[in-house]
Length: 208
Image 1 (cartoon, rainbow, N blue to C red):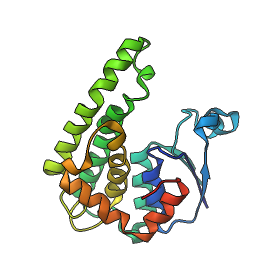
Image 2: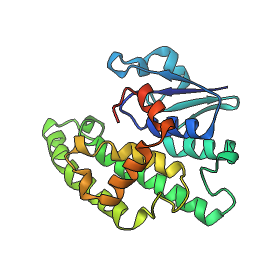
Image 3: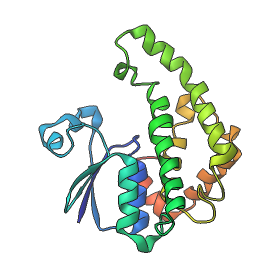
Image 4: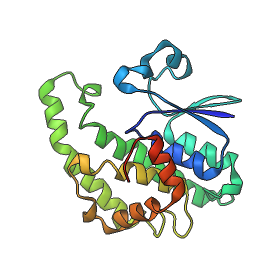
């Protein structure tokens, strides 16, 4: 059995959705970051990065959302969550997920975690002021050509959709109206209609 560590309000939602849609046999363990459980000695032995998500497998511990999503897709090929038999299409999946991880997530993090990049409080405030603009620019790019529709990769749902759903859920808090991006908004509505998604949202204490 896989053991999955997550926290509410984090990118771990994407991996949680992938596990559920893949039909994986897993145990989900929620960490309370308000109590700094991610910094506990017990969890640091699992993930020294003190972040989520983390997935404990028989072969060892995996971290970082793109890696976990790909691992799940490859471990449960019957779920067809990635085009595993097409190297170019699979590279497109990794390209999209890498963009969300390296650019979109980082832009979002500037709103509340400026301390990662600067010690100067005024610099933190400058970062916060750029978040809405940056997130809007990122999602304009997604809307304009990266979201093929009806799902990210086209006609079939994939691990990309779980990741996009996760980060699009941050837009309102970042000062961006999701309705500015009709394709992204429709994508979110489409996933919200899925019963499996509702189950995971309940575990994350999120209201659909």
